[in-house]
Amino acid sequence: MSDQGADSIEQRDKESRLRSILKAFTWRIIATATTMTVTYFVTGDMSTAGVVGVFDFFLKMLLYYLHERGWQMVPRGSIRQIIRPFSRER
Image (cartoon, rainbow, N blue to C red; front, side, top):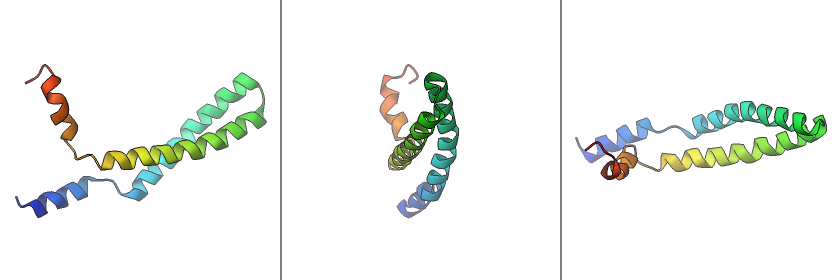
């Protein structure tokens, strides 16, 4: 297979930026609801839970997006090649 063919397969396997954003957004809804619930039970104050939830939502969504995009720069299979010399299976 030519290098050009391999490049197109690798591109096809990568997630789009939009998909990464949508995954970050939907996960943040679930995780922020959890954070707000815990904050409410700890503090007993819905206002504090709301402030913590809003801050948590936007900060962690940004961090998750950056994390996802960073992993997109790692070629698939490269982690296995790094770990393989240290594994029992050879």
